[in-house]
Length: 149
Image (cartoon, rainbow, N blue to C red; front, side):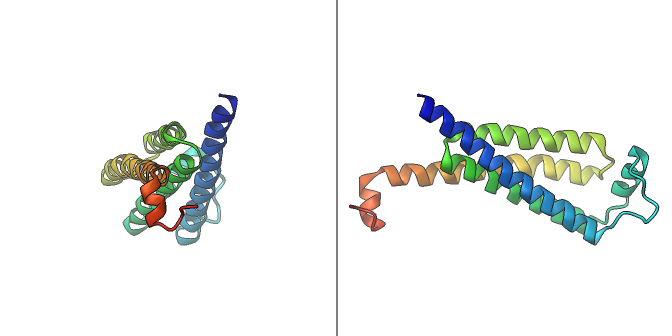
């Protein structure tokens, strides 16, 4: 029981670390492609103005990158742990998206698309992880995959 709980939590943390690393990468790329002005001081108003000026092509890339992040993070959490690890991470990532789009002045299309794509890709990651886990637990699948021992 303790070992299972530890594995679920460890899988969630690993998926979270990978997701944060990927999100950090998205933020770095975004800053390279659409840098802050030289007189940027970090106020909330300046942040909102900066986000409002994002070119649409960068936002399309952000949607794709966040979707990929959700899929990879939940896949890792589900592969190492189980569906509970994936679900917990998916909920956290979706909450992060909701907070982000509610606080910053993104275009309506972006808010709509990212609100749909991140949950869908999180489900895809969790589903792929659970299918892989289920197929390896089937002895017939192990033989056909060359894993019989």
